[in-house]
Length: 409
Image: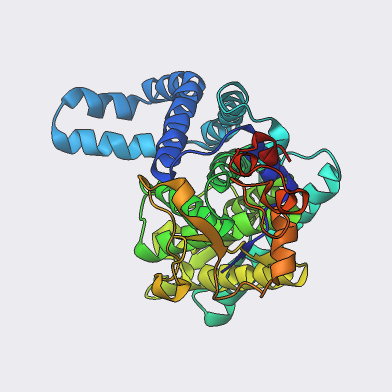
C-alpha cells in the first residue's frame, strides 16, 4: 500500500508520545476549539453587546417579547458592521495562542512540530498569499465565463481603511484555522495513523466546523472537505504552515474583499470590486453561501489536489508502506495462513516465529537470514552454544543452558 512520506517535523511530533485514537483526537480538537471560542468571547461579547444596546430598533424589538419581534431582532444581530467583523477576525489570534499553549504544556509539542519554520518564512508566506488569490481568481473566472456571475466593476466610495483591516483580519483568521485543523489535529493524527488517513479525518473535521454557517449546502460541505485535503497536501509538500495559512487567508480575502462575494455564508463585506450572481445558476456560483458552495470552486480545488499529488509523487514523497510481519506457528505452512494473519493476544509469543509476508517480500537466502538474525548454523536463542559445543566436545549439560547475553545486541 502506498502512502505519503512523513516530513521531518511530523516525525519529530511522533517522538514525544504516540497519538490518541482518531475519535479522541477529534474530541480533544473540538474541546480546544470550544476553549478558544470562550477566550475569544472575552473580547467579542462585550463589543457585540455594546453595539446592539446602542441600536434603538434592536432594543425595541427585543423588549416586545413576541416571537416575530425576536426573529427580526436576531436578523439585526446577524448584520455585523464591518468594524466589528474586523475585530472578530483579529481576535482569533487568541485561538492560535490557546492551541500553542495546549500543545506545549499537555502534548509536549513545540511550534516547529506544527509546521512553524523560520527558514524562508517571508518568501513562503508571499508564495502562499499569491497562490490563494490566483486560485480563487481562476474559480471567479470560470463563473464569469459561464455567465453565472456578472462583474460590476469598482465599488463606489471605497474605504481603504476597511480593506486593510479585513486583510489583516483574514491573515489572522486563516492562520488560526490552519493551526487548529492542520498544524495541530492533522499532525497529531499522523502520530498513530497513516498520513493519507489523517488527511481525510482532519478534512472532515474542518468541514464540520463550518456546519453552522448560514445557507450551507451539500456541495458546500464537499468543497470545504476538498479545501481541507488541499491544505493538508500543501503542508506535506512544503513542510511549512506559513504557506498554507497565507493561502487560506488570501483565498478568503480575495473572495470577500476583492471580488465582493460572500465568504462561507457570511454577509457581504466592503470590497474593491462588486459582483452580481445570476439566479438559477447557484450550482456554479454557490448561491447565498458564496462561491465555496459552487462547482467552479470544486473544479479548482480538484485540480489543485491532483497537482499536489503529482508533485509529491515526482519528489518521491509517495512511498510504499513497510510490509507488516506475519506470525506463524513452528512447522506451520504459510500457505495455510490467511493473508495478513498476525499474532493475536493471549497467544504464547515463544510458540510463534515471525516470517515475512510471501505476497510482496523479496526472497532471502538461508545465509542472509542467519546473518540478519545474528546466529550461526545450528544456533538458536535457547541453544546458542550448540554448534560450538559440537566442535569442542563440551558436556551436553551446557548445550541446554539459556544464554541471556544473546539478546543484548
